[in-house]
Image (cartoon, rainbow, N blue to C red; front, side, top):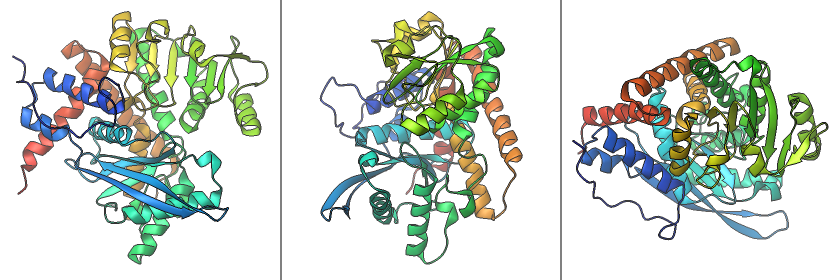
Length: 431
């Protein structure tokens, strides 16, 4: 017997009716899992709305002397399991709906990994590629000052995301510390090691993704020492994934960034691609490679595909062209529900984002613990603990997939929603 139809008010969407966006995707995924596990409608209503949404104006003085006002967003989806956790991105296409979706996905990600966090996300609508370092610092500090009442080591802990990094987190930590009058290293994660950051944090998202691939590949008969891989996106997650998976003997035959895509049947050396990207700003034009379209990249014949760019990259329009046996979602929300259904029917194994890219938040949890205790771990400890948690989560997800007769995304969501709903029920309703 399915749960009764759910009827409740959801936050107004920024999109026109019929237009699909990340928030719609996140709600569609929630609805599907809620129906599958017969989630109580009252609990469904709670989980379908972010707990807190904050939009702020961030005026800064540009280098040419004029003042420009940027919009900053922070969404905290759930505090059922603990303080909220999630990155901050700087991008011209940031929207409230996107941040809502990312915050909800962070809730499921933390829950499925067994971390004591709820989900949050933040963003500033800007193009950091057109801004000086001084302007980015000013914007970061102004945004942090607007968030001071709603973030903190036991409230909401930001981290890096698209176009932000350890330096960004250092500025946020310093701004909050100056406002409070004392050092607050645990208010952010992903900060420089010199300021209490964790060893292994920069590589953690990609490392966790590769650990998940290593766990899944032998289950479906894929020999990674003979496998080919395609990576969409060559930022932090994509580039580190290239380096790590190449170290397993996998031949990376295709890579892309925001400027275009390249291909080589013989394999693309990480060192060569990385050096070319560093020197020119793009992977395009790398020696011993052929330039192809980003669309052709996704259709390459390969065993492993790692989407490490933005959301909605795999959709109904291109899903049938994908030939990978394993898709490991290093990005958040790269596959739409329509594409999910197409790929599921084709027998493609998708390691969902809430597991595949959870290495970052897992090591952020390690960093938070270290900062709170002022006791720091060796990188070997960090990586071994990460592998243990990733393997445990992937094992549970695979077992649920077999028991429930569902794909891995549904299995991961069943585990996550069950944990979050249980926490809410046990805590009760205040007041």
